[in-house]
Image (cartoon, rainbow, N blue to C red; front, top):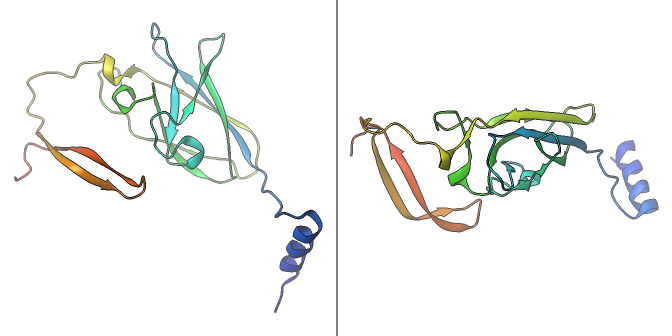
Length: 166
């Protein structure tokens, strides 16, 4: 049995020659970064619109107010994870002492209203030094790790806690 919605969709596709677009939400990332560092800042995240975790996902533009901005369009209600980098994971945003920052989370408004997502990068990984001499564990290297989502092989470094059995 064909529903009324299906008939309307078929009529719209037939009349317009295409499937009607869902209204997308304009999401503007507004990033404050530590002073004194030039270069492009990027937002990277799990959504294709954010580069699918490519470190140089979406380049931000530096404004006169010193904040870096970029606008992406997401389907309403879409939840994303994201971080800031300077184009490489060795220069991702960190806490002031260089500790990693958890992935940030955001959900695009279901009502489709444009929104700004402000956040601050306290420091960059390649510009901070972690304390030396702590027994933090060991690093295991997997030389040819198959990244199926990325469709390639890469070298993977895994930090194992000191208490982890070999």
